[in-house]
Image 1 (cartoon, rainbow, N blue to C red):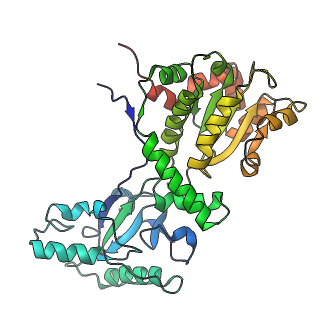
Image 2: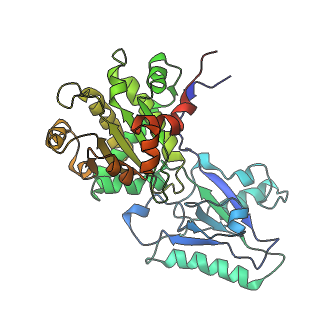
Image 3: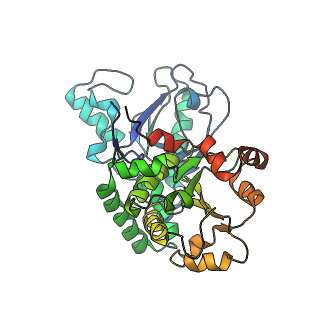
Length: 380
């Protein structure tokens, strides 16, 4: 039976990952590390001082072990290198069953000691000091090449909307003002608690999804991001649907798209507002736009790469800007208002010839849509 409830796609509880070099003592991790030890405010919720910044191609230890970009290194050979202690609810899965990271049976006393050592907090000192100590520990163990003490890295994986990854985005959204960013983050957390789960079996939400009024398509050119597509002509035909239902459908798509991004620290998406067949001055459902924006801007800050409004002639561009006066200036800088299909394809990473062959934007979306279809509950 299909579960009708849609939960946030960002995990609340971090996942633990142990990487042992026992079978490959001289092997390289196969990843580029990023430091989180620069004494910057954006790092305050990072649990460790080093994170995986990039995976190197090839059959590396990291790839074989399932390491992903954004994973934090929090311990080396069972000794913690943490910025702060783990939450009690985030107890290490590897030690929960009474065994060590390598499967050794532990007495209650040994288990308690192992947990304490692994949760060790390394105080921040001079910039780079803790990061350097972590690298030094790794190099020392690797250099010793002791078969009885192979390198063992403990990593934590946090969701894209966890504070460790989302805090820098909230900070940027509030121009580095920590109190304002903290208030924004706390308001977002309260919103998440109230919003999820969403009952996607709701008839009105399903009507929005099945109408293709909102859907999503991947870019077909490297270096571009997925696009959330809003078909306002389709929305116009859903007169019985309230804006709240459109927002719920939109939120589920946003969550689905952002969860698929390769880097939880910087998930991005584009938006295309298709105004084909919609009167820009009289028929545009501004109430829906306002409701969607009032949800997206404070809860998914710095995830919008660009917003394309099409087709809008250059003569109506100023009118369109006035109608969207409720949008903040930072977001307006990401607007692309155009009546050129070539510009749309260029901005979103779509092949122009393929879109033209499909018959236009809406037809191309219909053929390419991904996430919306996965959210639709088919009647039996």
